[in-house]
Length: 62
Image (cartoon, rainbow, N blue to C red; front, side, top):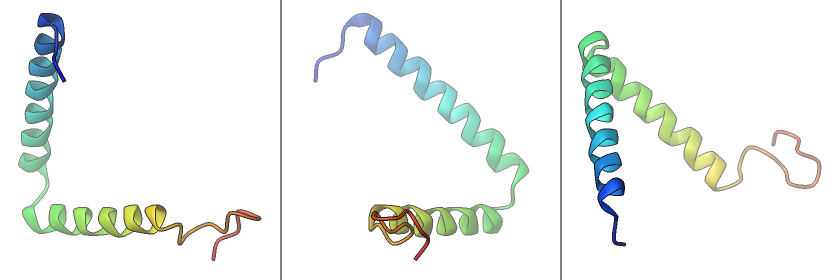
């Protein structure tokens, strides 16, 4: 992938904003709580990816 100059500027801007956001979160939330949040988010994402939450036929929770 080759970015234009404008694309490179937007990528740098986005990266900076993400880093600022991450630092703000880390300043307010203890490492252990953040670890557990990521742990739970990973389980949820895996369940969604593996289609273990909804039955495709009737969208009921399994």
